[in-house]
Length: 64
Image 1 (cartoon, rainbow, N blue to C red):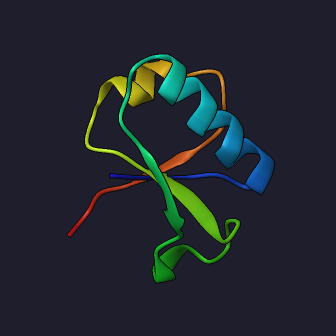
Image 2 (tube, helix red, strand yellow):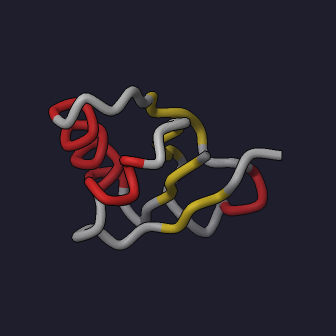
């Protein structure tokens, strides 16, 4: 899944929180259909990420 944010600073904060929580993730370009967000997002397969990031505004895009 892709977790997209409105600002780049939130992407890197999310990456830090996820890594500190043991969630494997990677910062990648935002999928084309959601360019309204910033140009990068977090990609992970771990649903634990949603709980870790519950205090940050984000949108989830499922992978096709």
